[in-house]
Image (cartoon, rainbow, N blue to C red):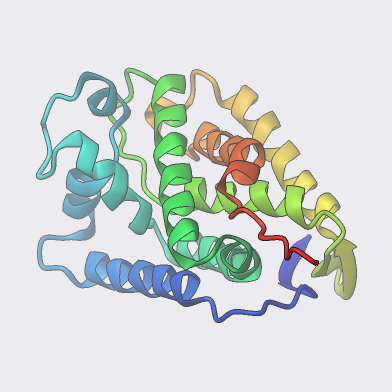
Length: 225
């Protein structure tokens, strides 16, 4: 399945969603064009699990600062493309419901918790984690709870044939979440050599799913006399 848009209109312009996507793109261009080299940037600004837990400074930034910098770095076009596509599809609706400032805080908190979920799952790893996946997973967790029946335009591949199908968000995101959980369990013991930070995805998703109601602004009811 390859989702590419939803049928879920918004009432406000998604300034923060577009801003986050823009910053990610600029950061990726900095990675690939920097004279220091992409590897240097990743190892100095990515979130290293052992450093996050020990707070030992071995990079250009303090480990606590890399929690934020790592959210805007990516390991390739497919990596950033997939993350930004999911953020574009689902982020605007969450921003619309939370408001711009609340959404920004929610996004960052989801990313922070995702980083530590990964660190706890691989406490001795010295491999930097990069990517917006954990924060975006928080958006997905929020979306599946707030808009489970929203229709998502999805490409379904049948061999050489491609069909566009409108599928409820509950199924699209639920399928994604199951994949993260299964792969997270299977990846235990393998991640120190590198790979996908599955537990960052799981941590971010659960953060969005379990806390989004807390982030929602209080509704104001009009009094009638």
